[in-house]
Image 1 (cartoon, one colour):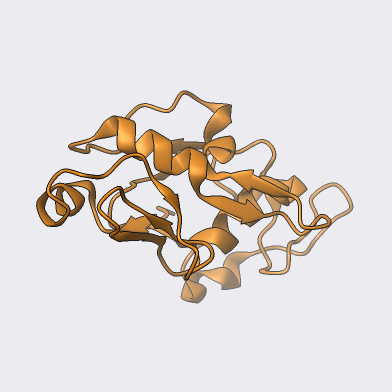
Image 2 (image 1 turned 180 degrees about the horizontal axis):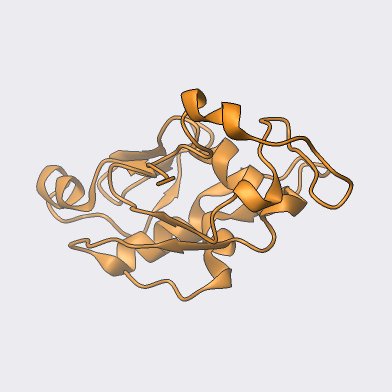
Length: 153
């Protein structure tokens, strides 16, 4: 089944086809087996991983996007050079944490397919947005998740 921005797994109504677990094909908490997982998961950036979109930063910040820095008043968000907040949407951190830390996703390639007005800004954001891995507050950058393939923006 296709994977839509921020959703991992088939729609709930299709989960009834899942077979029983075996030692060689364990179930995750969601009932998916390794053979149910896709070979590739691809994300868009603007409007899928974060807000605002690059063109909005250009428009509302007068083109003052990079360099981005941590937002001291809102941990987990970044600020543009024009002091506009940039933040991850919905469950993006949880989705990325699962893709990065869960062994069953190890063989799945994760990529980006995005067209943006400012590809260097997008690459900087991927490097600066951090996600806690759950391992003694160890963190990783979104860019780390996409190391299995080239980042083409």
